[in-house]
Length: 249
Ligand code: F6R
Image 1 (tube, rainbow, N blue to C red):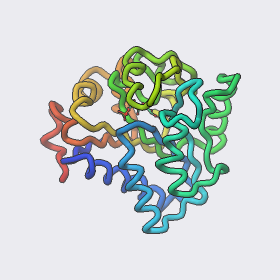
Image 2: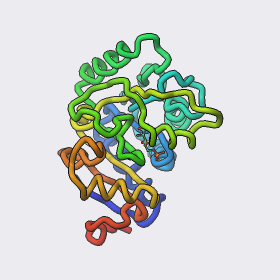
Image 3: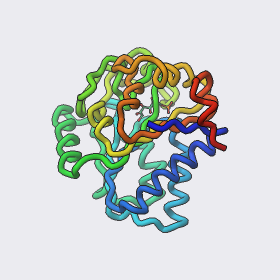
Image 4: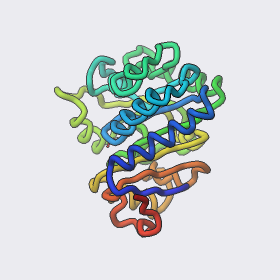
């Protein structure tokens, strides 16, 4: 694992966007899995800009969603579905044939999980996964205590996630469950970018990077990943012992 700390959110986002673009330059048929949320928004905007400016070929790439709020409509601006279409798929004109997201309104959510697991297996694993970190240390919707080798599953969202979720939704949020890829899929992705920004993430990043490794803080498992970059702005890295060695401009 490599920890990279940037002076501000723009530089942090540019670094993450460049890392994705560079993978796409040599692997034009990558299987990519992207988180939603506030943290990676600017990364996606900068990625779109670079891919368009440099005409990087992504016509053979395939995109999967990391997670979704169960029973929330795809058209709700708080849904992961809406977010990924708005920030990535529409600006990049990615056709539906190159996208597979969880249908969190499906009657059979277990079948949705199986479909996602089968697809990942069929495509020979995830090439790059970009994740954010929840205030409780979750990755995707893998809440504290989720098993380390899990695949896609449906999960009860914990109180912290439910309370934080209000920031994404205009009205009342109805979901009490999430559908998510599992930590096993996070750990076996060939490359991982974990991002956190802002001082509100500093306490959980300190626990994740310098506390005990274990599923009580799912983000701490990044330390067991063989090819992970933790990309932080300096506020999120506040208090890390490692910060002085890793401050990039
Ligand atoms: C969303 C997701 C979540 C978020 C996390 C951080 O797809 O997977 O795990 O990455 O809750 O959210 P933000 O970036 O809004 O702080």
